Length: 207
Image 1 (tube, rainbow, N blue to C red):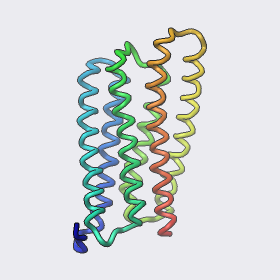
Image 2 (tube, rainbow, N blue to C red; image 1 turned 180 degrees about the horizontal axis):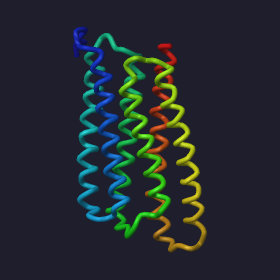
Image 3 (cartoon, helix red, strand yellow; image 1 turned 90 degrees about the vertical axis):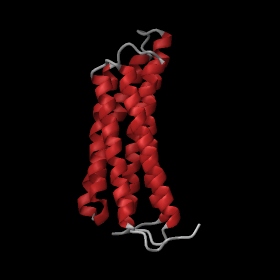
């Protein structure tokens, strides 16, 4: 495949922002599913559709990476950032699918706490992507600091949730189902911290 020197390198930033916006919108759909636990199958299908859109954006990033000679940042960083956003989207979709697959009657209160943290981190991620083209540390550093702080908050909720699950107050089968959901929510939150770390690495290279 021939490399195209004429392609706009700014397009990578546009795709990253589109990916982050799609991720934020998908998290909001999951938040609605958990907060208003009705029509779960329909809401899960909408999340699946968003995940497919995210896959298309990720594929577009990789296609452009394979056909662009001059890139605005290291090629491996472009791949890492696109892949990291996609990983979070996969975890969000997995949560929605688990509610359907396990026929979970109601989300746990801790799950609502996790989705609140995830939503705030997704919002910060979208804002960071909008600011990324300038590669300005003073502008971007508050975003990765806040996302790391949110990840710590998410860890505390996750640990409390696991402790409660194994308190002996729940049926063993319910524990297995709920644990899988809270693990995937934790994975999504951790994934956004990974995105923030990639952004930090990119910005520090260009400082």
